[in-house]
Image (tube, rainbow, N blue to C red; front, side, top):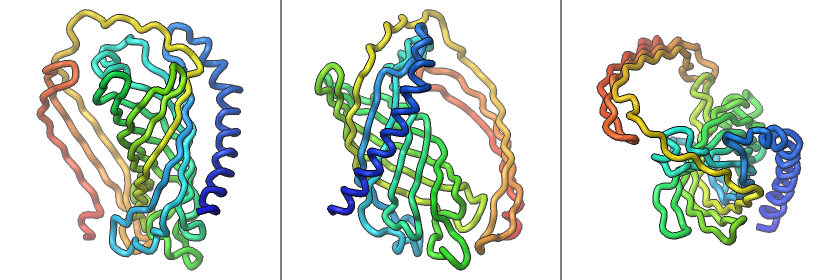
Length: 286
């Protein structure tokens, strides 16, 4: 436990110096010029007690117990220029830099990630609020599958991966500037099977964070009058590829085409009807 805390503290200090240095030197001056729009007003530091969840066969060996995960972030609140700002209770928007030890350095290595996030209040009672937090970005993992050096890492096969972070957290104001936040989070790393093996890493964690308001929230605009768009017809297309096992297997093209017709029932709810066409050349092989 002593080594656990010592290692986490060193990385915590390093990440804090780098991230907050970048913010004060670049983001903050640029942001202060945007007097009429969104701007950052809060800084957040969080610590996690995390572990690898063996969600697929043969992944038990990758779980080596608890390990530290930390993040630094900056956030602010929308000004009310859009109807959804009001409908969703002025959700918190921000950017996050994340570091994870992963608990198995010689096989899983370490993870560094960056992603924008949104925190939507689900329930508010007095000064307390329960929030849903979600972020999507990129991560760099220092260890990945290779033959014959690291064949035990069946979860990750290349350094650059998608990072998804979501969780529930309770916000408890301690003062006008400080807010204590805590809850449960899940972080997922994956390359989308653009290389194999790619079981992906699921990392659940208990989280505690402290948020500091270094600037007042600018005045919010009143809700806009008028009727929102009530009907819409949308088309989506996608093109990609996937790989089959064994490791280093061949790549196959994948296609998708979707269309959806929706009718808005309220500011938050729409009723829709759609059709999807998916075609993957790998299906003929399996």
